Image (cartoon, rainbow, N blue to C red; front, side):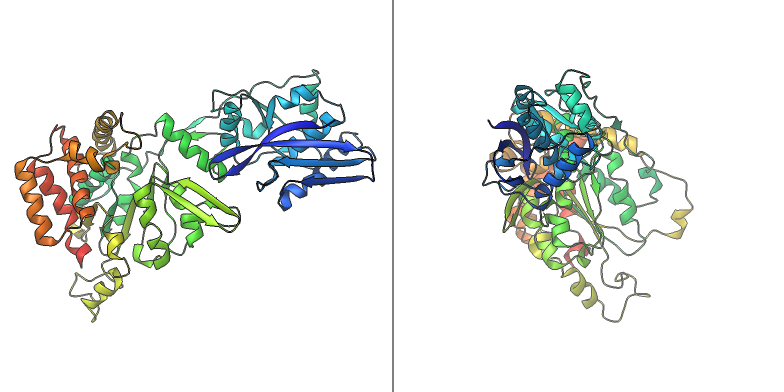
Length: 504
């Protein structure tokens, strides 16, 4: 008779159910695993055999066959150890078969029978809830999985605890959710001296989730401004926290099961590969754009990134998702991120300073920023010049609004947008508005429309640029608490679109 256990296989952020079948039949002694296992799954037989031996459980001199169904789905990862062990124990009638079939299990076994934490406990818990099963996992992964309140999560320290649980000797207690990780509030926007225009643009970008480009010489405060962006963003909603945490769970970034309600802030180095930014590798892992889902992707020294890497950002920026296509996997990851880019005006960084600029000016700036293609530059809603800060300004005391004050305005603006797009699937902030929805919520008054039409004709705005100006104007109106988009809202939005340095 075939004994069964259940687990999951990961395809992106989705956890697909897998049935683990075990048959112990007469024949030459053998232990085989079939069903498209990778190397880690194939090696499970040695870990399971040794772990059972450490519990004084000897395998019979028969043929043991483990089948991972569906057989045409690739199986990857060491989390198949525990379900294989459960199916085998059920086939040997050491634990009851019906109890094993009621659970979804995942976990890696060490040679002494201890259960090692694995990635993906949170998506696995979601899948277990859909299948109406209990989730059995390593104790260290239980706090992460327990955040899915619709499923009963049992965490075990070793395989012996699992056996005692199923035999009724010592039931496992339900796991408790991990702690909520507090956001870092040590960096305040008031620390930035001067740069009032850039601060205003940062507030607008945060309020509407707009992509922003900062161009200025070295030391003008671009990185400092970007580092303070998380402090003015509202915390993740429950839906966003779950979406983001599922991706971080697959990447193994959740710290002891804790859920972080602060928005992700990823800042990859400009030497990062395409697989690191977009996603890929042998198991089609999520890249930086997916790890920044519902948060910020800060790319400093933007023109220094490889051209192929920059061009791959164009489609994810528009669609909010990325398809990682490999020979053995086609995986889709969400990536609704806010792109914050920073660049020097030229290779030497001092194009605007006649005393320090190189002899190749202005060709130096044209060649350097020319690495950013026009279609990619067109996707930035806000383009801001960040000029050098005068030495006299550095001695002045902190001024302007604090991060907490700006965050309050951003939160109020986002609340308006949440209510506005509540009945529109796929739209959450003004940056998501398109089509009829954009025309309905962001149509300016007569004066504003006339100004925008004049500017569009004068500077040759693309259709994408035209719509992005409307989105930014809608966000500015939200920050002002205005129901309609007026001329001065459009004028300010246009001023961020027609940055001199960005057009160089």
